[in-house]
Length: 210
Image (cartoon, rainbow, N blue to C red; front, top):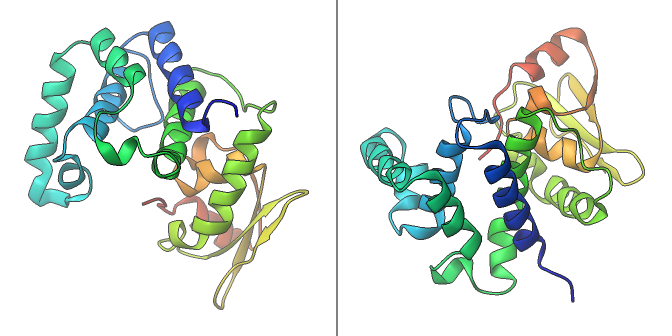
């Protein structure tokens, strides 16, 4: 068997981190590559990370302290820790680790790639397969805050139809591009939107993701 997809994305993102340096932009608003590397280290190395990441305002202070502590280790040390892999058990279980990590690493890899001017990876059918599974399984969940209904269309693969009543937008693009839309990276995603102008405008203003 080949290298697990999440492991390949991890290694390639670590290489890119070192190539572009700690002050490069990312698609994560307000974050440099140093900030993103710190987030990834905290996520898989600190058991308090779930509270800090999804706990809202109540745990905002904890999140800042964890990020500050990670950044203080230095950029190259953070990248070295990421490359070594996660120490916590849930991230290391075969199968489970790919389920938990593959989308995270793909999206954050693109956060750096697209922000420094690199285009879609059209030579990665494994990523296309991962992305289309994500679109089919998580599309309706990740679009739950959309202001309009949306159908997700990947030419040659299929369609996740819009749900409910009212105006709908058809979002057409390659699977990797659709995932970027679903995870809130609409501005970097190469997709076409079709539908009533007011519905398209509402979709473009929506906030998606976990």
